[in-house]
Length: 155
Image 1 (cartoon, helix red, strand yellow):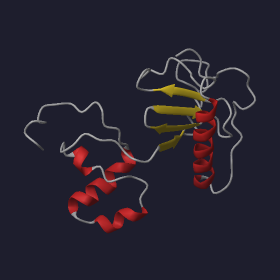
Image 2: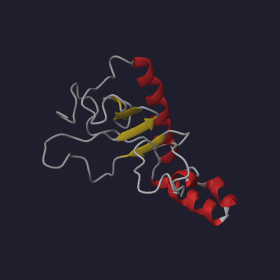
Image 3: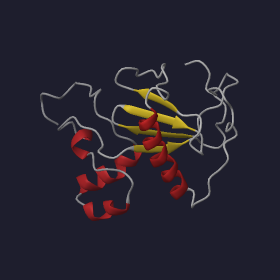
Image 4: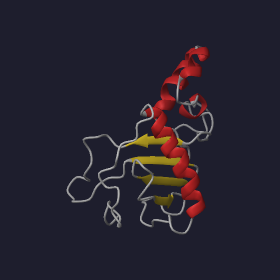
């Protein structure tokens, strides 16, 4: 780690758990194994040599046994995607989209989905396509699909 970075906190870089194995393999010099992994080599960021974020979007889905937000009657979204400053949440079938600008609204208070329909459509297509590939072509019917209102409740 550069001495100028010691004792500092990097609050700008974005990386995720899938980035850890390829980063550690890179540090160990075993880069050929990284080709089959979902993560990106972020070793320079993890070692404090640079500030930076992943180049590819992050995708994830809700665990089946975590439907409800703890302590509320509201359902959690099924799928999520982070790309740059944007985060999209939606049901398995792409319905009930919630779009947040994490640079301006890091606590996700203002759903911008209706103000950015083209972005929602583009990110939603990528997210549901990722999920279908992950699920082997099967798409679950969300327990919240068809609801007209937000299911996560106040944020």
